[in-house]
Image (cartoon, rainbow, N blue to C red; front, side, top):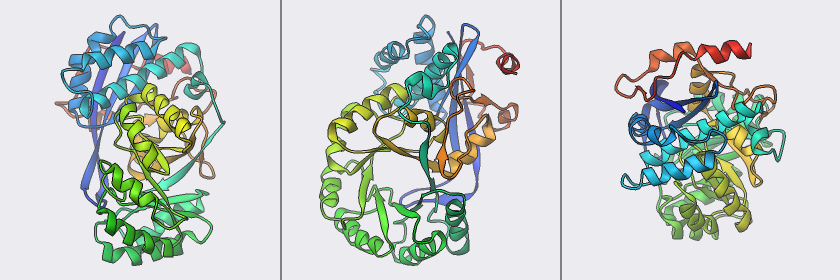
Length: 375
């Protein structure tokens, strides 16, 4: 198999922030793998360094791999990164390649990725996610209210950077979406457990039903402590920074809902293991970000309840890829008529290439042959 990995950095519309971090751009590492006249596409949201790991460490492992057996390649890649450490950049690199392998397999079978995995459902609900701490007032109302008008049953906003402002921001949000739309908040680990509990009591005044990462995801005792003490109508959720099934097994007993990010937790193969953990624990699974991959994945996971339709990723994926799934009445429905993820990289994506992150491990030929074949 022939492998290409390239990093693209896309500026945000304006500087953004959450409870603990600010940013003004997003980097996506896109992998393409060719075998038997088809090209699989996968990606992760990471540093450009992930592209170099793919080129230098993972691509040699894939040369003689079976394109119909992604789990075999996945196991080989995990062995290959042993001395790098299996988490962080290495895990995200494996995730991108694993997604590309599953996409390739589905294309070889002539099936949409969700169908090749085996669907549990035709479509999956999504929630609009943004509401950054860098916006408030009319701008916040327009974003969250816009999703509500489009038919999303839930929206999520960031909290915790300046807790004194959050009551006004929550009032704005609730006023914009009305009483019927679910309001969710994400603190990105901004609080210690006692402050998080005080804030949860405030959130309850605005009928908030989801509290994500009230404390650091590393504080499993704190997550469990809060889950048992927050107002009864609020779910405590975490998991977006899980790297593997071992970590998920420790976190699952501490939360109401486990989050899974297929671009971090070792790809589709890794995410399917986490679905089993959720089933064993009797809790729901929610996909974090990367909506184009997560839509297919969650249609095939037993415990999945929704996908995060994250503003930055939804915008970036539609800019870089042809064939993206557009939510209809707040739901994502993978198209059975488009093999794999149904995505192709736009030619104009090249303007976002990082010169030091681009790599061509095996000299993949021009990508337009597959697009012509589809037409």
